[in-house]
Image (spheres, rainbow, N blue to C red):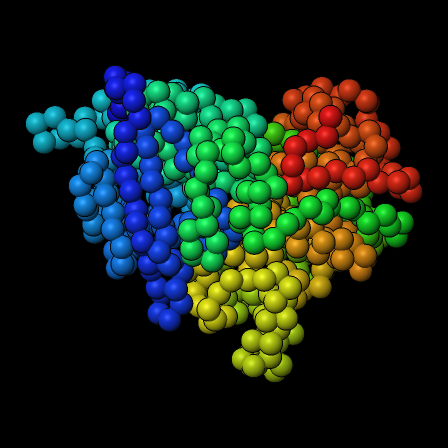
Length: 538
């Protein structure tokens, strides 16, 4: 654990990367990239998906060891050959994709490879005490003897952060650390970052969220297509200029939800409950009743643990028959009992964890993209490889996937490009109902706009969309209605005109500021222009 403070009031150079070039086969992903990290600063590393950000920090962290260029840490040239060597040099990374071992306890994960010992034996009491102290800094009260896999992804993200804090690092790299955190959890993280700065640490922070960059950045470095574009003080780089550096052009367009008259009722839930831990335990979603019509976007708001994600999984059949209540699809009763059945019924689910449940990382891009729609590409049970390649290319091309080939393993892509593949996988199934759980997590600004327009197109084709997003501006901008959940139950429902950040957050915390509304609204009033890429509407 880190103790004490850096008593030197003057910032010092902790790490410098110069002229870093990295190739994967014939693809050059970094070309003469550079980055400097000083003590007492948050240095934001910005750029679109595929710009080379993750590759650059993996080189500093000893994950990629074959590259051209120079690394200096504390003024000494180094070339870490493994993450262990990088840790010994004072470099620690919170990767976008978590590196926890699900079957091991929280405490064992935090001190993996560095367990405290006494006389050659692991000192369990010391390990537990240190783990509890670290988690307390993050405002997290959990049983450190429980396996990590028992906790939701947001809690796992905080455990990953605690693991890095235990390494006494000078340079701490955070790659999209708030992607799975709600607002209060993110606030605690920002308070912790300020504390780390005061101790003399240098923070390299990667985020696509403009409000986060504006809030915590001291300096910003931008990469585009693997090349260094520029470095500037945060107050000298306004949002418009930052975006221009990132994408090479102006992006001034605000998202506009197309004003559509919804069609017939597509999906209805009546007293629907989900029991992921068995019928003897409290349901994660309890007696939920809602309806969504063709061409409509219904948002599900709520804080971590609201039950919204479990509602989606239960509706998709991921918990088998561990549900109660009634589900009607186009007026016909159905009983979700397996994902395969749901896909055949025209229900698709984009999960919030692409690594664990969205993709098969060892398979190719093409194979992942067609995984849910193989039936249409496999006449007589034989996969038609050329047809598969054409189908994958057809859905991925509009999403501007950055990949050398569709035969690349998905695991070799950046997080944002993996998300594009995870979304594309469901387009080939031509669903009637699309369940989107955090569809823009880890996606850059330009790609977010692409996804927003695609959602408009899907609803224009008559798809019904149910959406979960932790970004309030996105929730307000995209949705025709918002139903809010708190501890498994619906607490309020808002029309587009009624929904404000204050009202939605109040309902998410258990209050019902407007009273429960009727099951659905279909006003044709002018849709307000809300920018999900900027701040919230007030």
